[in-house]
Amino acid sequence: ESGAHRAALEALAPEARVETLGEVAYEGVTYPISYVRNHAPAGLPRLLVLSGVHGNEHAGILSVPPFLERLLAEPTQRVSLAVVTPVNPVGAAKGSRFNGQGFDINRDFRRYDTTEARLVREVIADFQPDLIVSLHEGPQDASFIFANRSVPPGLTQRALAVLARAGVELAREDYFGRTLPAPGYAPVTWRQHQLTRLWAATLGM
Image (cartoon, rainbow, N blue to C red):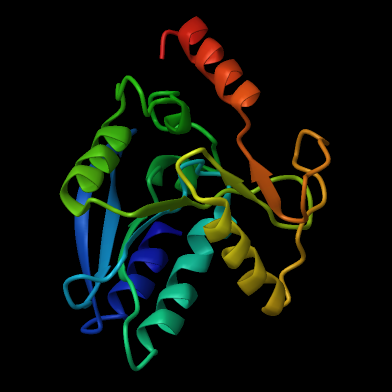
């Protein structure tokens, strides 16, 4: 429920700053998109987390408050963090992959037809993150990381090692059924990148 999610975020103050990044309306109801920042000294690595791009994937949305609680409880902040949650508040409220206009926001980060994608673009331009993590769900009961060509393999491997030590089960296949080169690691190959470009061009993205 969007009100409960916002209340859980606001309960993190004053350790975190919670703002309304923007609002979208659907069927006469206005839904906020929240923007959360920690208080971190200048010069730290900048991490942007997106949750709820697909509104029916609730795990990423629900994980944000406890994740922030844990991070903010650390005596020293090791990263400058920004979180946009949920990116798709209408989809989150309605249990839909799509936004109120029927767009899949995750396919709109080239044309920026949707308000939600444009708001994320503004955050990226302002915050200048070193790394972006977008939280999603798949059909399997295990986790993996899609890493594009901009993500150094060593960084992904270190992240997977942290997840494994925390007891997170790492998938051996992605949700297309393809065997991963290492548990939890789904690198975007040159061939996949070219197929994605062709697919985007076909869709006019």
